[in-house]
Length: 128
Image 1 (tube, rainbow, N blue to C red):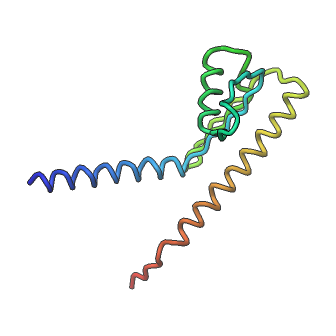
Image 2 (cartoon, helix red, strand yellow):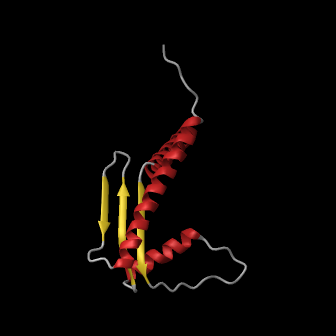
Image 3 (cartoon, rainbow, N blue to C red):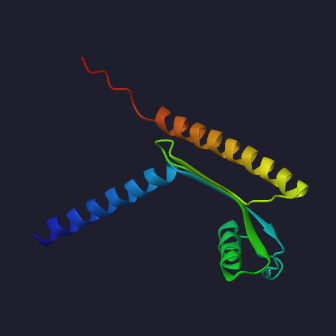
């Protein structure tokens, strides 16, 4: 009985993880941040970790340092979309906003291409 309970828990955990992965694949977030950021980089010879860099950046934004969100775009699988753009943009910030839009388009296309690749591995089933 314990083996069945363990297998059931493992299967539930796997389905939960699969659901989280699908949800992540089906949504897209792009954030453009502007300001001044000072980060301490690890000793030479170590690799720059993009996830750690993003986490440090997020902490700077939350701490109120000289960093602010210029634009934020979020899109769900059902195409529900939320876009935030800072008001009263300068000429330089307007150029950053255009870059943000282009990055979002590129990320959206990359996500679609990745999903198409994943789907290509699924065997076709003919239902007669």
